Image 1 (tube, rainbow, N blue to C red):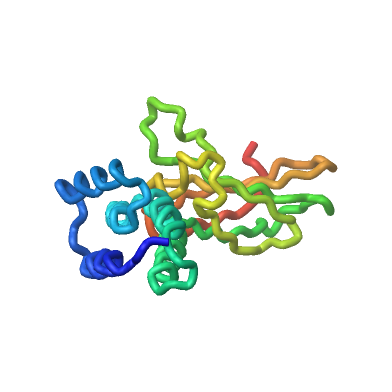
Image 2 (spheres, rainbow, N blue to C red; image 1 turned 90 degrees about the vertical axis):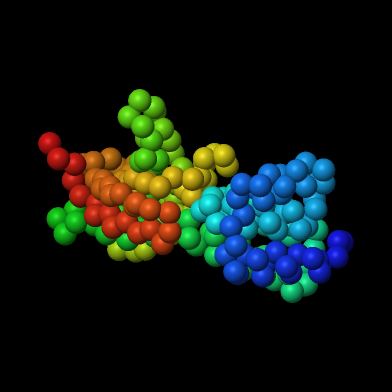
Length: 202
């Protein structure tokens, strides 16, 4: 394992919110090109990504940094806290409920999907599935959290999109009426969407 003393300065720099862009960013990239496992460079790269609100990128650097540290070291403990913070910031909290007049089969399940909603109209990115979770319809109403750990494609995650469309729909082997609902979750931090599942409009 590498010594982590110099890394502590990286966290002090992050706490002071000193900008890590421009030449600083170039120097970090150069350091990682020389040694992809350099702890200080990884810590700074993670901080730079976090400052830029690239939470998935920051999480990736922090995971690489963890591999260079003693598991119970103070820096490793801080890195795990940073990962949890980034994951929570990029997540979308979804409140889901059934409409009062909605009726579902005994074996019904709910599929909750998050798709990109901020892509130019000339692209197909609005159809990109970013995260998906299944739950029993009997659990409704409920609140779930969609985050980058549920990514369908590791290179295209919730934290990479400023606007996300959340849709919930009922599925059942017994068939029945189409029931679904959708809403937008905008921004990059502490996002929330409220989805009511109801019969589709004719």
